[in-house]
Amino acid sequence: MSEVIIYHHIYNKQFGTLNVSSQPAAVPICVVPGKPHGGIAPFFVKLSKYSAAIGIALILFFYTPKVLAWGESVIGVTFENFRMSNTEIQTLQSDLNISKPVNNPPFDSRLPKINSLLVPSIGINTSVQEAVLDNYEEALRKGVWRVSDFGAPDDNGRPIILAAHRFGYLAWTNSYRHKNSFSNLPKVEVGDLVEIDWNQRKYLYEVYATSKGTQLLDYSADVILYTCETLTGENKIFVYAKRIL
Image 1 (spheres, rainbow, N blue to C red):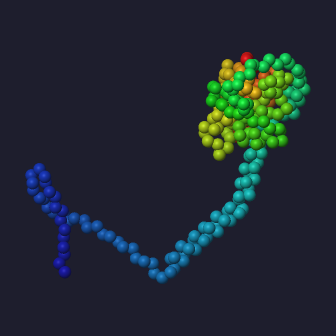
Image 2 (image 1 turned 120 degrees about the vertical axis):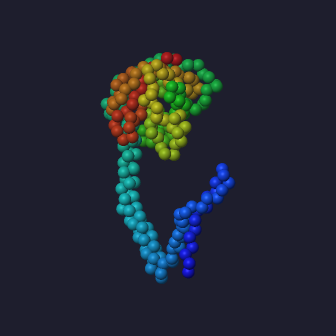
């Protein structure tokens, strides 16, 4: 059989000529894979799939309880961080349990019937959740919790203490977290306003101090906002405000 050589043909548009290259053109070689012989290869493919599935099942069996236990411990520590120390509770419940004259602002029917908290400087606009100490986790799942057994806007005996998560839950959207949690509480500055709409009366407070640590530094505030600084750490962020209206 005679050898067939294919050359490049190049058309020159400028001169209208057809040039033929003296070098043979490279002819691509296509390799068609052959089918595996017998059923050995499919057997090993199936075996590898079954082995992988068994391996994943064993990993889940041995490690899932540990992961769940870790998750529960993190959640438990996070909730535990919201509890105040015995010293703080005793100070707030005894030393400051003094009756003071209450000067309530005028009733305003335009205000919502649901008690709410507004901190314009950080975009908080949320309802205030009521719950006893034994069930405060449910209140935190919704947003801001008024710590029970302490003050309310229309009761000047003790400070109002409002707590909320800083990081929240995966089910929360960014918009919900921004409005209903204390994610931006570290950005609050002295001079910022805190509004509490309570029984359709507007109570206005001004921030005069902030602090970080494991203990309250000022028990004379009319309103104390606080949240955890980190997800599992003991430090808290405190914001102190005095009523101005």
